[in-house]
Image (tube, rainbow, N blue to C red; front, side, top):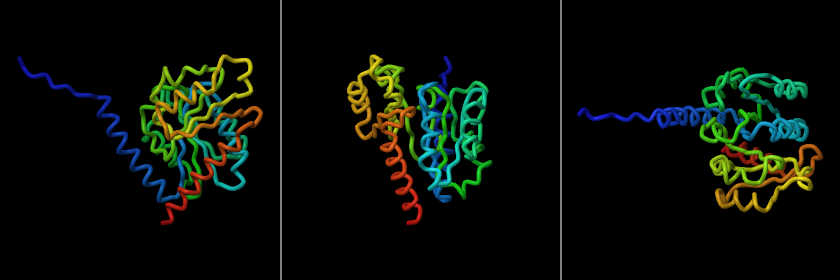
Length: 226
């Protein structure tokens, strides 16, 4: 019997993408441009968080947004209406974006003139967590209506993220959602993760999120000058 050679396609693809992602990070660092990858389920509030971030930071920083969806430009239109440079990635069926897609999107932006690019990844809790986009920081958003069991069901996304936004606190009094349970579950997966319970609707807690992001951005810019 001939020896069977096993080729792990997924592993090879992820390895190739990691190389592209590292190159993209290096390129953006030279341009002093901070790329943030925002991941979460459909309806969790990714676009709402981006709009709140723009509202708080656009007067101090040059911001652009990359929107990724299987179809539609609804979210892009909301962001562009705020006077923010926006690029739409239409994946046509892919459940996430990778570094090559992000690089193509960035080429249409004047990255040397930008401080912050926010990537809104395709809405789901599985595929985006597996793929390096070239971002400097990864953030997950979980909303109260989704339930507090998501860290148990989808652990990877909470493991690879630098911060977790718990959105829609305005629903917490009418939902079966235990914030302490989520915090404990997430900390067990990733003890270094930052947690930001907030409400994009009422702006409760938004300031803590903005302070963290601005601090990360300033630290990054200072490192680029060294």
